[in-house]
Length: 281
Image (cartoon, rainbow, N blue to C red; front, side, top):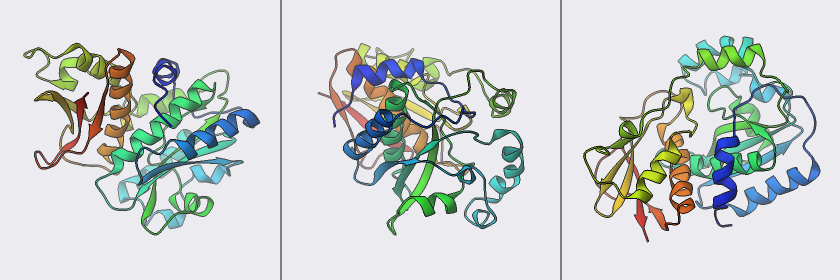
């Protein structure tokens, strides 16, 4: 399946994270469309998404056996998440699976964000959850190969008509901050003559979601292409490369929306924090 450029580009402005759902089951046609999308959109061999209908609420609650899987900091925060940050009323979930080995989490971020935007285009609500879910429970409801792990999940369904107090509190506590300016995302943007297609791509990254809204992506011109890298070395329990995969998709949608072609390619050698290179056609 090719990128649905215009459909997903439009969905970027429509998507809003929600954690409180009204419990209505997914319409069969929407459920079928999501499953077809997940089966057909596999740009990377080591990343996939799975739709789980009728998901149990305990997917969103850390269990005792999860404390050994998640870092100590996450265990300390579990009580906070359980009190006001949990997912409620979600009839289904999207489970994002990637390689157990480190270094390719951006493949999952790219693949998963396409599913999120497709769900948005179908009139459904979602919310990226990269930490406060039960790894042991998701492993029970999704068949994982020995070399796979679940990196993130998302509820999917119809959100409550109003944003709940619990949601507002969570989004404030979660470190909500302003979006970075273009010159902070694109290294040297003000000092260099960036081509219009590259500026369009970076601008489309501005509203992209990331863990705690940390926005760890940085772009730089290099030759005739653009290199995406991290804002520093990995830290925390959610990989920055996962967020950068989301940025990769947004950048590509922005470039293609404005009529320019190209493709992402691996970065060989160079800076350790580099993630991928966009090569214009």
